[in-house]
Amino acid sequence: MDVFLYKSDPVRGQAWAEVFRRRAPHLDFRIWPDVGDPERVRFLAAWEPPADLATRFPRLEVLFSSGAGVDQFDFGALPPDLPVVRMVEPGIVRGMVEYVTHAVLALHRDMPQYRRQQREGVWKPLPVRTAGERRIGVLGLGSLGQAVLAQLVAMGFDCAGWSRSRRTVAGVATYAGAEEMDGFLARTEVLVCLLPLTGETRGFLDARLFGGLPRGAALVHAGRGPQLVEADLLAALESGQLAEAMVDVTDPEPLPASHPFWTHPRIQLTPHIASMTQPLTAAEAVIDNLRRLGSREPMVGLVDRARGY
Ligand code: NDP
Ligand code: OXD
Image (cartoon, rainbow, N blue to C red):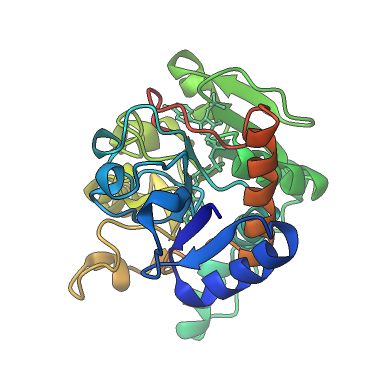
């Protein structure tokens, strides 16, 4: 029997195993390190694959990432023709929609400022603007960015999105590529980063980008830590160019105890919890991709290694 090997959180692996027993009984689902005969391993779902993947599992056909990101993989160390598939499943999408909606609402309704006022014993109402008067911009129009925007549009926010190639998203002003970046930034009061980490997006959230936003804008960063130039964020908050930042991803994770983000009055830090793969729906999504593979349809979330996502 062919083996589907799972190498990620073992507790969540039990939930995957249950779904595989029901939906894919023709596969021998195993949880690392219980590999069985390495010659029988055809599929691997992992966050961190073993370094000697190619020699250890000579019949491996697909590597599934157990998360949405694939930046944790060293593509150079993987067999060049091995298909790599990122996680696209409804549970991780819902989690991100919740996180970003919460962050945008908190910023829109001045909650960080009210927290500071409360600590100082200040009772001071601020003007209330409607959602339609608040301009949100989302970097990245993939499975997460588009779902987040659908929710924000439904709540009445004035929404825009930016991606590499031209995308059409209902109710959203879309911008594409470097040449349309300035227009996108100029109209964005709350900037949400949902970009994958690639050579192009490393260090992307920098002083130049912050300078393109209207003064007093806010950042919600739920992409990847190395996309943010920390010193530039601190300077933008210091100067008032940015008013607030909600940061879910850092470099490294966790930050060292002495890091200024921990205590900064205008940074709200969360420990990379914006969203998480949900095991039951993830296993269903992977089994659906195996069905696609079997019938020679393109798998959902197939990574283009040249682009890096
Ligand atoms: P997708 O691959 O579906 O979408 C990526 C989007 O980013 C696409 O719209 C793509 O453009 C755009 N993009 C990529 N590179 C560039 C670039 N150089 N310039 C402009 N646009 C670019 O990814 P997901 O939506 O599934 O996930 C996005 C990221 O979210 C993950 O890679 C991960 O880093 C992060 N994440 C964070 C989590 C957390 O808990 N904080 C949880 C899950 C994911 P195009 O449409 O043209 O291809
Ligand atoms: C992911 C993440 O990429 O949790 O899935 O960040």
